[in-house]
Image 1 (cartoon, rainbow, N blue to C red):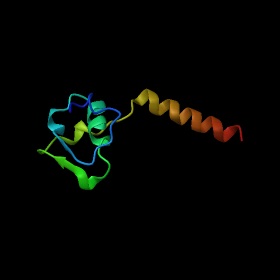
Image 2: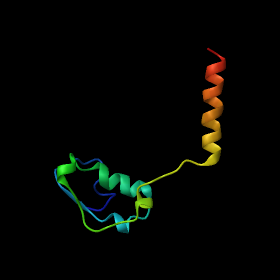
Image 3: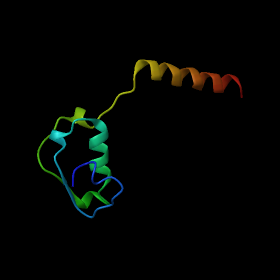
Amino acid sequence: FTAHNSQGRSLDTVCIDLASCRSIQSAYVMLSRVRSLKGLCILRPFNLKKIQNHISEELRMEMDRTENLSKTTL
């Protein structure tokens, strides 16, 4: 299966090539199809940036703003 073909499926075993992922979303789809870690096979080493995502500074500032707002309104 491709990442898109596997959407909506739960599989007992999955062999994936994270090195070939084009986006964090496709890596998520591939990793989230397998029912357990025992059934996961990663074909080759990959750059961790393929599965790490950092929120933007703008989003971080908005999260801080809403958290501070909730503290002052309670």
